[in-house]
Image (tube, rainbow, N blue to C red):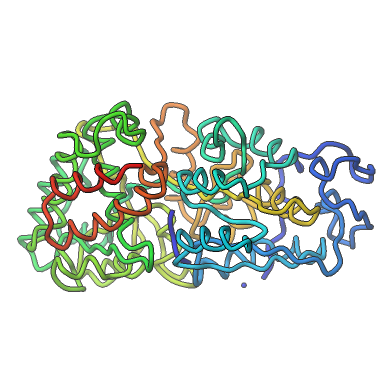
Length: 453
């Protein structure tokens, strides 16, 4: 996931490979999925980069996802030139109730043309209804060329690719104010034990160590799952993490209990939260997008959230994200220094309609041209290997991109997003709310274990 969210940017990024489509510009495609846009037409001046997509005067494609507010505005801008050149009107609807409503719409026979699934587990469950279409040839070609096998796997169910990623994120960043850290002489921790020590040190000052929010509309609770997943991976390694996500070990295995208790040592301690907001009880209802903002005022020292949170510091990218800027971030460390294990996420673009215009949009969203367009607008990242890192809005996002592309990185997809929807976006979300509201770790995890389908 997971996230609720101005001049069109030229998409012809130097050095980026052209569309991963079969045939040459001007060929008459025999397979619409090989070269979307069977209606043909001559590209307008300045639209040569979109010629292979064809022209669709007056066509409309509706897309549905979790991206809201300012991030939705940037999303709409990212495909504005594509719309102008192809004639396709991409109508995006964002919803904080996506996880529930996508099932309602599918069951009611009213699915969107495209859905941006923030959870592979949810995608798999909807694929099970028979309503999601396998990725067309052009999307599969882009996925193969521009994403590594790990990311391709997120859009694959039972060996069939249903969609390529849209945006991507590295989770487990801890956001902070460089000036506040410098003024107080606080050092960036290199291990989890050092993070505990730093938290205790900060608590002795007039700054609260952490600000936290689990709120996210119908998806309330997911920020808590990110904490748990990060600690499972860092404390017990990738093998245990994978076994837990696949339910090869019980959800309430002692190692998972230990991980959540370690999280609780930080964010259930009334001395450590909730800077600029209130006490521990406010975490359950504070919107995750607002939760980190007290860092800017020095009311709290740290906020745990993914790389995409860069887009939440301001609506207009006016907050400087830099090592000497208003905010910066370090990765949640491991048990030892220089651990290279991270969690992350991505949206998967899946289709319920195989019309030429829908295939054209789905293919464009899987291209490096779209990735460069959206990333250049700021605040987000893509794992598309055709992305020019120079287009990222900060060194932090460029660092995150290097992490995603580094073969030595132990990358694991967000655990709750990979679990069956009934758990990952169901009992685990509600369980995290119960836990932060006072329920004990063992009972919460045991309840989730009993809910596993």
